[in-house]
Length: 198
Image (cartoon, rainbow, N blue to C red; front, side, top):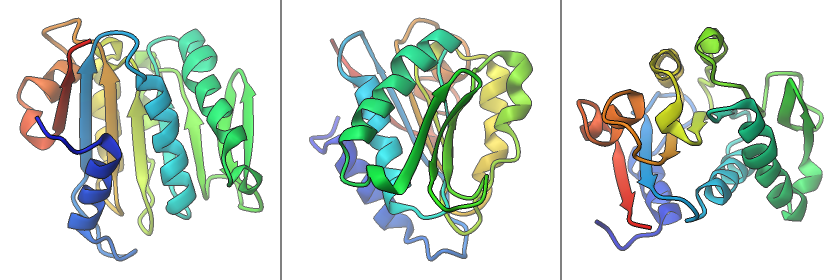
């Protein structure tokens, strides 16, 4: 364990890599497993706002196990903190089903945004091809233990250039699957893993 806060750990990983806007760096990868009620969804909102506010032209995708959870909890929490932020006037927040996006005002579509996408296995192609060679491409999986392996595999393609980041949050419900592999299995050495007893 570490005494650093999650925010301090992210900042330290950014500093270590020293992304210059051109030369790709290794992905920043976090996985947090815990019980219920520790504020994971609030942290998701904070991470999105931090990256969008400090990483011009960043591209982000956030997902959760069900469309209802994605809209009613994850995306709603982002909306709450976005409205209270000092930078809310920089961005346009949309929350209609099928069009949940936070995008920089005045930018062309697909230039500086975070989108919410449901994680059904048949939507795996929606997680492919996200790149930000001169900025940050990031993925946030809320309730990650229930997300299909196809989605974990699909997002790997977005980690090849720029300053890529991955944040997985969930309950340690299963001993198989992408979230388990990132926290306990064959991928755990590539992640900074937090385990919070709640």
